[in-house]
Image (tube, rainbow, N blue to C red):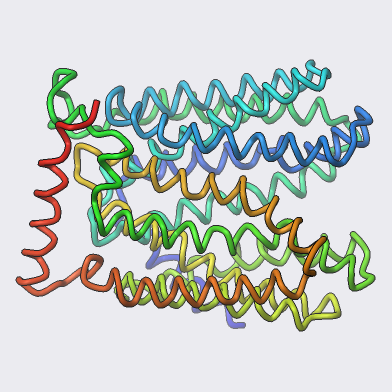
Length: 427
């Protein structure tokens, strides 16, 4: 591949965004560069502390369960308290949890700490997404979300490599480094980012703007459809992280082979995210979400036909392309459908769909592999991806139209008025 197209794509993708966005981008990069806890937690629990693999899986599932509660909590705090204080407090809480893991060794203690870390780590995401929507003009939103996602994956890649190289220092040292990196992230937000919450949100508690809860958000029919379809895609996206190593083991391949295959995911994102974003800009959001669903369906479905590390890696490339298209497009679609005064809560509800999938999919994937078998898992993923693609095409094409007709604009405005009328019901 020639380097010139990548350079042109990088320049086009990174130009014209506000300075505040780049400080937020930097904080994401710093935070993810030090993200060692989840990467090495299962090894720490089994190899260092001697717990069973079952317990390690349970603890990681608790992290996802914490995220189910943390996402709507973070959305509420983002709108009521503000983006900046929510990010600072939740980053510090997550850092404190990482530091606590360096000293806590009891089974109950670890479980509680990881659960609370799941709450804190997921609660910060609605604030980040809402701040990006506040700072960046709507035509550039998808590009901004793609860049932030690129920073997340770039930092994760560095953390995986750095953590692997520094493992001789001990797992506890890595957790302390994680805590320091998260604290530095909070410091960047404190020193370089101002509050971006719209003025209209600065109202007295009890006014309609303050009375939006999760149920009220889900009364928004287009957004509810977006959340449900995203949940389907998230289930497919999460399944390979449990199902793929089990499938490769069934095929007689080693754990080292799985490590090399799954590393393709991060490498492809870091290398191609900017180019993919350049290719997909100005495309229909509903069409992009449908295409990403089909890529997930094709990549996961083809896993049933794989038998060698090279073919497994090829399937990872396919569904990774789907991931690269889906994540920023879905985030921009969420921002597009969100009323300005409730951006945090809308992002929180969307984040909850990711957290639910993160909790359910590993359990479901493990059960299917142990029962009906790996082929059933991957064929099921292909079917779910195809269903999601049809849903995006038939149900959200008009709602997500960036240049809709006056009739479509009227329909969207009517839907918005319906949501706003429903808001005083909440508490």
